[in-house]
Length: 261
Length: 325
Ligand SMILES: Nc1ncnc2c1ncn2[C@@H]1O[C@H](COP(=O)(O)OP(=O)(O)OP(=O)(O)O)[C@@H](O)[C@H]1O
Ligand SMILES: [Mg+2]
Image (cartoon, rainbow over all chains, first blue to last red; front, top):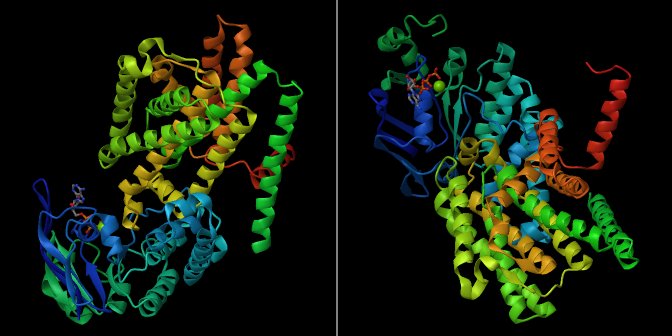
C-alpha cells in the first residue's frame, strides 16, 4: 500500500538541475534508502518533500485514509502537520534552548489549550503541560537523552545532537520520517547502536522511513529498497543486492570512495 | 510535584503582596513624595513598554520600531474616553479600549508584513507610527492637534500602577512559559527548523506582535492618566528607540532583564537631572560602556531566579579560589 508517491519531481537552481524528473514511491512501513555521490541532489529531494523548496515541476502525493493529498508547494509546517518529519544533515537544533525545549517545541502542533488558557495558566494548561513534559521525557529515553534534558542543545556532543534531531522529529508524531545522514560523524559502534534504534522506532511508531546515508554498510544492512541519485536523476532502484551489482551505480561512485559500496 | 508548584506560586504571591504593601505604606506616609512617585510611574510605564516589546523583538526575534505608535493609540483612546466620562469605570474602559485598538492596528500592520521574510516589519512599524503621529497632529477636532490634550482626569495611583505592571509581567511570563511562547522562541532560534517541526511562523509572529501592541496600549493609557497631558510629538521615533534601548540593555529574551533595565535607566536619568547640560552625553556614554562590557545585555536571555543567583555566587567563589578551568 503506497503512502507517498513522488512523480517527475524537478528542481532547477538557475541552470543547475539539482533534481530532475525523480520518481519515488514509499509503501507503508517500508525502510527505503536514498543514496548517491556528493551533490547528487538527495538533500534537495528532502527539502522539496518538506516544503522548504518549491518544486520547479512535478507532484508529491500523500496517500492517507484512502485519500490522495497533493503536498507539493505546501509550507513546511503544513507538510509536518500532514505527518512528514525530518532531521537535518547540517544539524539544525534550537541550539541555545534546552534539550527538553527542543522536544517540546516539536509537540506544539498537537497541543490543544488555547491562547487565553496560556495567558492565565488555567487547569487545562497545567494538565496538558504535564502530559507534554511526561511524553517528552519518554521520547528522550528512547535515545538515552533523558538525563540531559536540562542541558543546552549546543552543549551536547555531536552524536547526541544527531540523536536529539531524531527525537525532535518523532515528537511531531509523524507517519513518514526522513533521516538525512543520521550516522554522519559516528564511529562503527555508534552506527551499530543507531541501526538498532532506527529499527526500534520504525516498529514502535509505525513509521515509514526514507533514509539518506553515505555509510554503505548501514544502508545495505537496513534498507529494504534503495534509490540511487546521480546528477539529480534516479539512475537505479532496487533491493540492496541489485544495487550493489548495478553497473551504473558502480560507475557513478567511481572516483568517489567506492571501497564499501 | 503538585506541592512544589503551589509552593512557588505562594512565594510569588507573597513577594507581590509585600512589594505592593511596602510601597503603599511609603506612599501613604509620604516618604515616597510626588517627585519620587513620578520616577516610580516612569519605571512602571517603561516596564510595561519594554517587556511587551521584548516579547516581539527579544523572544520572537521580530524587529519592531513602532512601539511608541501603539503606546500613543492607547494613550489617546484612554484620554478621549476619560475626558468624556471622567470616572474610574471610564478610565478602565478607556485603558482596555486603547489596548484593544492598538492590538487591532497591530494585527493589520503585522499580518501582511510578518508573512514576508526579512526585516520588513521594522520599516512598516516605523512608517505606521509616523502616520499615527501625523494623524494625531491633524485630527484637530478629536485630538486637539499639535497643542495636545490637557486636563485628562488622573486616576493613576500606586494601586493601579501596580495592577497594570505586575499584571503585564505575569501575563507575559505565563505566555512565554506556554506552548505559544516556546513556538515564538523557536522562530527566533531557527525559523526553518521551527517550520519543519510544525510551527506556523506567521501565526506565532502575529500573536506575539499583537500581544506586544496590546500591552503598549495599556502603557499609553497609564501614561495619559498619570501625566494628564498628551501631545503627538511625545510618541515620536525617539520614543520607540528609548524603549528598544531598555530591551537591549536588559537582554533580548529576558523579562527580568527588561524590568531591571527600566529601573536602572529611570534612576540614572533622574539622578542626571541635576546636570542638565551633560545629561544626554553621560547617558549615552553609560549605555556604550554597558554594551561594551555586556553586549548580550544585563541578563542575556536568562531570567532572574534563585538558581541563577546561586550560579553567580558559585561562579564568584570559584573565581576567588582560582578554580575556573
Ligand atoms: N539553495 C540552493 N541554491 C543553489 N544550488 C543549490 C541549493 N541547494 C542545493 N544546491 C545544489 O544542488 C546540488 C544538489 O545538492 P544537495 O545538497 O541536494 O546534494 P546531496 O546529494 O545532499 O549531497 P551531499 O551528499 O553532499 O549532502 C548541488 O550541486 C548543490 O550545490
Ligand atoms: Mg545532503
